Image (cartoon, rainbow, N blue to C red; front, top):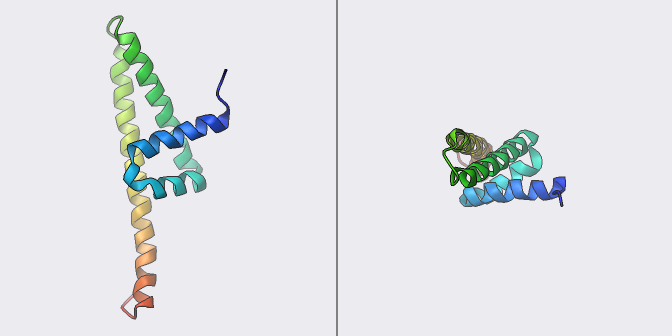
Length: 107
């Protein structure tokens, strides 16, 4: 039975959460609020699926696609990490001034 879009979305999120468990709160927030981040998560799942398929096929003989999918997965992980870091930095730059103002420090 084909997966529903909601089931695929759950898989997208689960894969990214498994890869970046220390950033789970931020991953969930971005996934729910940023369509571009959701798109990267979907691409990541599709690349993982492709890599898994070619790993199985490689048991029958060499597959050039396997290396391509491994590289794609690495590139998407780097993109996810960069997005998470940028979002984390942006959040910190917004939160720190308000904390400093509340504590009477310099903004």
